[in-house]
Structures are given as structure tokens and as C-alpha cells.
Length: 199
Image (cartoon, rainbow, N blue to C red; front, side):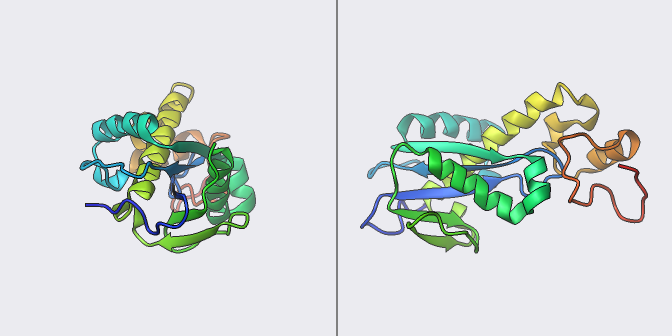
């Protein structure tokens, strides 16, 4: 069972991102503040849940959260500032949009760029330990998946409705055959280095 909060002194927001390892599309992040008595036995790290369960949980989180926000950083911005900084920026943008200002931030992972003057704690595998981070992981993942599914209609050859921009064989094969789109991250290795590709 996941813990509801890390500390009891301040209003706590959980943050997580989705799409760091993708070859295409933005990186998404969410920030979630859960109510004091929130409980859900299904909620977990989004990677441990089926798509159907993630979508069900998204509705529950959006309905019951004290506050939530989702934000993204584009592929072009990722190329400019690198994926780590882009992940931090996406989280900061999500925090900017919260209608309630948290007094403490819980972040999934081991690194974070401080946000304003608010204390934070980094939690390795935090999306499997704390409900607010797990809720943020579900929102970031479902919003990003939805974005890539919509983008697929304009670029069907890359099969983003299936791979969501991750480096599957079919995705890399399509890049080799058709080249990169404006949504690809050119700072990433789009195809294995032993293969030549003119971008």
C-alpha cells in the first residue's frame, strides 16, 4: 500500500514525468495535491498498470484531487536544453499551474531543480511509494499517450498510436525509411549509429 504523504507540516504536491526515453514528442509532467483522507487500492506506478486502469484512475484523480496540473516541454525545447532539464522544466510548468500553492514537493527520481522557495524531496521509485507521485505518474502518462495517439493521425507511418514515440524496432525502421519529423528529438540517437541516416 502506498503512503499518502511524506510529511504532515505542509500541503504536499507529488511530481512525475513521462516520456523521457522517447525519440519523438514532448516530455510531459504532472503535479498533484491529494486530499488528506484520499485512498485508492489500485493506484500505483503507472508503468505497473494497464492502460485501462490508468485511464480509470485518471478520472478518479481529476475528480478527487485537491489540485492537479499537467504540462509539457516540446521536442525542440528538449533539443535545446537537454532531456534532464526539460523534465525539470515540465514539472515546474505543472507546479506553476496548480491552483493551490504547495508547501512541500515530492519528486520521483534522484534529481530535481529547486522550485521557487519550496522545499522538496527526491524519491527513487517514488511512484511506487507515495500516492501523490503515483497520481502524477498516471496523469503524465495518460496525457502524453493521448497526445501521441492524436499526433499519430498526422504521421501514421511511425505508429505512434502503438509505440507512443518510444524506440521500438518499427519506429526506428520508419525513421530510417522516411526520415525524422519535426516532432523527433534530433539530440537523441534516432537510429543505431552503425546505420547512416540523413536528417
